[in-house]
Length: 195
Image (cartoon, rainbow, N blue to C red; front, side, top):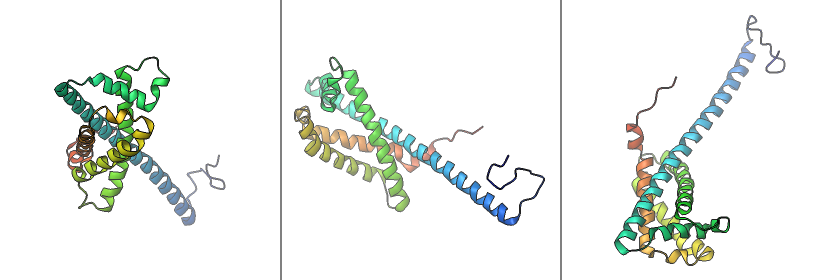
């Protein structure tokens, strides 16, 4: 049976140089394709970790803010459910749904940051510092969310906590994501042996 039309799978017959070159090119394409998928999956995985770190940093910050000011942290989580419109699908909006939605959105944002950071750090490997880039990127995300998108979707949501508190929350997300995406952190992490 021929794997590639016109090519024999009989290993006893040596390949002509032109056929050998074609086989080598096909094997290189397969290798690059596989490498690209692994690379994309690795970047996405790092993004999920960065998003989880950032999401947890925001939750801790809001919990600290709520504890100090006497605000109900659970109501903040429930309002996340309302702002995303998921409360229309659920009876009641428990805080757990709000935290889950928050973490899912954080993971998506983390993946976007990981791909952006990878492109940026490849373009300027010596000048790009994640601890400078990520908080600035998250400040831009905050401005778009809290000054443009959320007032249109749910004007009440932007008033749950003061703007300064929500901005600090996003900056902390940026610092946590930078820690997860930092090249020094990657170098210090052990690489599991492949079998």
